[in-house]
Image 1 (tube, helix red, strand yellow):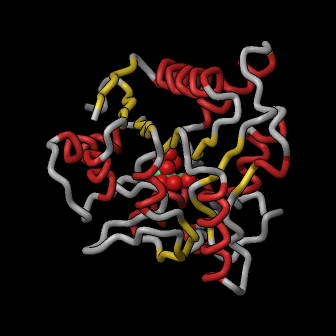
Image 2: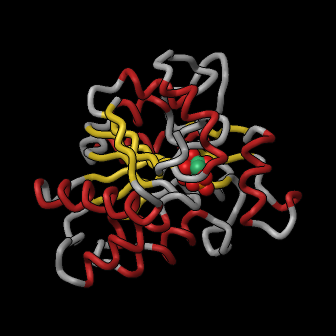
Length: 238
Ligand code: F6R
């Protein structure tokens, strides 16, 4: 895994945006895997700036988000669909039908997971996957476990993930306890993976990852199995 240390959050966001821009210049119909949470917000701001200054054209790009809370309506401002619309999608020229995110508001979870995996396969898989890192080492919502699901699935969120996500809600009781997440195989099958790491609260887990051991109890360590994985980390975190 390649490690790139950035001076600060701003530089991390710019570096990540450059990697996406290069991917789209190289292949205008790229398939991007995207994530939510606090970490990629700066990246999305940079992408919007680059789009507004005609440096990137998203007209042929397809995106697949990693995850969505379960039992949350797409109009709910806490949904990841809403987050993506507000922070990126409505500001760029991506075709609405090319923006994909699991539907967390479904009675037919198995069918939804299958539909999502099929859509990703039909698109040819992910060219560049952007990841964030959970405080417990999760990627997407693949939480630490003795075995990790390979495909898109419904998952229960660990208490530490619920606690970490509580900062986006009025009350910890409002934080969804379940989510639909893309599985490990789609992440590892991506041609290129970039994991963004910002904030001192990630120090302990990044050090764990950088030891080089591979364990399902820290899902991000599986990225050591990937031949083109880059860790972009803010200075001071490692
Ligand atoms: C979100 C996701 C999660 C987050 C992770 C870090 O789509 O897949 O794995 O990337 O929980 O979140 P932040 O960036 O808020 O610390």
